[in-house]
Length: 513
Image (cartoon, rainbow, N blue to C red; front, side, top):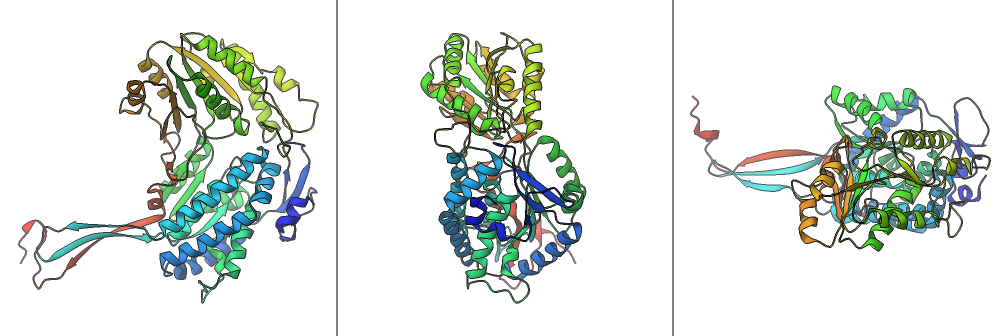
């Protein structure tokens, strides 16, 4: 087995087996070479049921542990991530295909959210309100929800789990994590680190069950695990990250049982470039947003909306930059773009390019030739593509999220038209404007501006900071993860009224009896 698996100790996990096809085993592959890394045994509905029961039993005691003590355990988990930062980052790169600095950066996000959750454990604030009744006090407080479900996608195989898990744990919940079957080794590795901390800590020793079951992990198919999970009334919250199509299925199933869902779904993110923009910044932000992670971020830049007076200059700069992007082994120094996740993504990318061309777009760089270039080589590599949209055009293809490095360039005359074009798609995750104009920036950020959950000025669409709530509107799902008050999604609110007098005045002055 690969040395990274051995260094992380996950080669000893009973779910991890030799990389050979067998019933009940999913093979995980390196997208850079196409070679199988290892086999992972799939778990069943019965395994899921047993895990739910264990997590529920432990949660009843976990929620009674004072929140700062839960925070202390989360702090230790964050430190354990620090100890394994390089190897965990390398595993992300190996299994998912993003370049090593991005793989390590994703682990750093796990560390950062753990640090955030430690402080949060002392700040689960409620409110005190004045009562209309004399000698009464009103306040609200927040309680843990119970055992929650976390469903994650392949493109951020560890960070999105941590965004949810560290906050959920600090809030007093236990959890069941169903990772993508494309990246199960990352899930096993992260869970192993958390479980080791739970084994070694002396703060929480439940009388029933195992402390490790605060952080539950189940690796199984949608029919065996996914479907039971989203329909399970014992999981009051399902946090799901993935495509808009997946989100509709999850959201409908959870809503049918009147549960809560936290959905972080697709994006069709745009950057507006004004004539007064710093073009060096704009081009750098666009290239990173469109090419980083091979265009496989939900915040990847899909559309570039450029003022007509500078669009030719911007296109020339982008083409020159694209031609200099080193593509290759994501674990090698100097690589800026790794492979797509699998052949199906390559095929979808090619189809999108062909459709864009058929709808009148001019392919400036990349194109199908940039797909054919790697067709006979190992791995799922492609060259990034820029498709220039005819003036006044709005091709249907550009309204869809192609999870690959395909950038559409539009031109505009008036800012209001650019904002309207940006907002015209079904997704509403991330957006940005490059401008030195205070008025243009404030217009973009106003009620009449971007309709996205994230709106940036002089910074691209890609890359979220832990301190802010992450998520979007419309088909992006409306959920918020990570910072700000996103913790409230993992708790239930309770309003309390205390009568410290000897009378029982009724609300609104009602006389009854």
